[in-house]
View: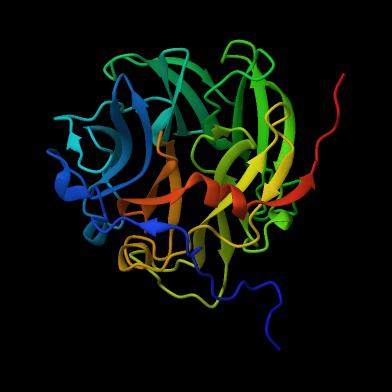
Length: 340
């Protein structure tokens, strides 16, 4: 008898368009050692597109591990053709810190903010840093373990900064992967509270393992249009990439959050926005992975969605904002505990 928990075949929504130039950035584009370039944060800042991407470097096939990880920097005039800076822009390591990775970018109050994950010797932490020149970064906060996939909203909400995040509640969720998407806010980007559960794994029909934030949300008159990553696991999957075993599949989901109470989901697509179908999404370091990290709403109404593919390259898909909003079927999901 088939396992009812297994997610079957998944397809991307017809309205989403993969750019014919995909992948738009890969290891060959970096002027320094690079093996995997993926999971980038992308924003428009001071008249240009800016991208900070994850770079894992080293010969994994020979050594069985990568030599290290840093964050690279690239600029573009059109959001498609990128010029990579001559050296990485952000590299944390040494002492307690093992590496920083998976950047997200948000422009807020005239500054560019970098959210990132940090592997430390005592757990995974989520960090926030600010920069105006992409050479100097002021680290504002680091969460307690274990937390990651943080993204900042591009506006204050109720006078406070707001973020989405994905903690790792292994003990309370049955001792296994069962990770959900949460909200918190802050008066100063340093001290965070008012934690609220936004979206749970069981709310997403195409996930059975974990979900988490993707790109920073974009404001629309109908709500915060938000992409997230969703993961399903199938034990029958074999090698599926460079590692001995890879049983997961990553897709991109879409939801709409209330403008004033963004821990309330008011719209949700019951099918994935993007599922691995193209060759560069299906084959790489980890097969069948789509991980959205950047989303830009153009004046024309076009939405650019930047995503890591197969944990190996960076790709671009586009859609009309009206079409994306129409995908978000009206729902009313509120998991929170009202405070105050």
